[in-house]
Length: 206
Ligand SMILES: C[S@@+](CC[C@H](N)C(=O)[O-])C[C@H]1O[C@@H](n2cnc3c(N)ncnc32)[C@H](O)[C@@H]1O
Image (cartoon, rainbow, N blue to C red; front, side, top):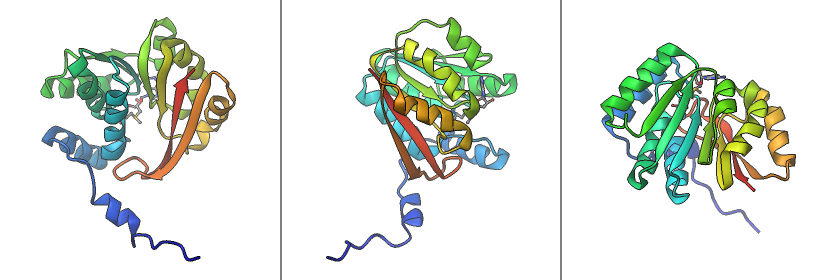
């Protein structure tokens, strides 16, 4: 039996088949490339949009805003349902840039930005949230996991970025072993993502 032929040079091929983005998102992608700001890029951005839309998410929590690129996808998904995004950023300069981008996108009313350490902020939050997107320092993912579970409604979704980073190992093992989650790890080529070969964890809160 011979294997079905694959598309030659799949990375170049799929790198050309990107979701459409508006000028603001394209500007943020170029800026991120220039300044080495680690954003999720168009494929993971669109994945977040689709997951939030399919889950009819109204209350979304994001940990790690940077310039607000991923928050724009999440807000555009939940705004039609009257939903909102709470996004948390530790760096005050990044937070100010993100806030300006939310205003440019006319999404400032749908996104609340809280500046501070995400672990401290989530300890003081109460849910329920429909979706949590975690994109902070990978070494604290595991410590954030219990609060993510407390804040998500049963059936809510946790998406964690950059889980192929060595620092995410403890989190990856914990979310897989914990019977409170139904999780998968998606290792993939992700054009425009930082880095382009990386993994995401998707975990349903049981
Ligand atoms: C990977 S970037 C976020 C990218 C953003 N989600 C996007 O794709 O557009 C991570 C951001 O999280 C922030 N950060 C890292 N650890 C944090 C923490 N413990 N609390 C709050 N913010 C944190 C960093 O300052 C940085 O701006």
